Image (tube, rainbow, N blue to C red; front, side, top):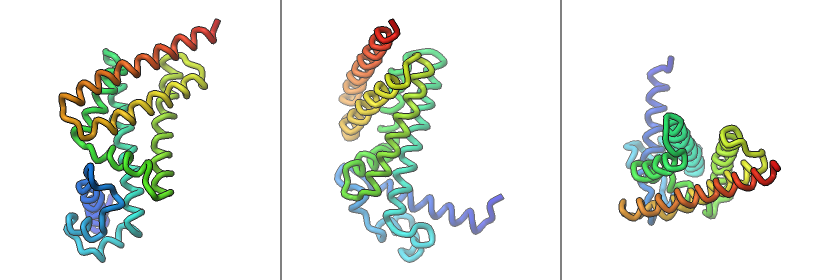
Length: 204
């Protein structure tokens, strides 16, 4: 069982991560945040920051890991919801859009840092995207009976479409986001149908 001091340390660490996430928006990427700003919002002294993170880069990499994990968990829940009945593509898109609306900065940090100036950040985002692709490829191979190569290609296409749609949807009004989601569903179904047709042709 975690001791009181360890619990307090974890609580403060969590407050720092949340404070940094809260300060992200369309105009502010992680690289524009200062240690003092983050510490102030977390209600700790700037010098106390170093008890929890070596520097701002370590905090940012933690946020990238957390952002990717949160999105993957939500997408898994979407697929589980679809197993109870319904279109896995439609439900997955709706789940993704719900995350963007309720917690946009989880995705925003992946978007900003994917093409940022920091090589470690770009590598961390690339790893998170690879986790998405790998997980979806395994799911597609198992449930849609695709070959490993075709499942991988399909997963790469789907993740690219979803990521690009997410970038466009972040700062949209709800009505425009709904239109985008409907279009994304069509695009994903086109990829899935094309993959199905190609697999059928390869199996002949």
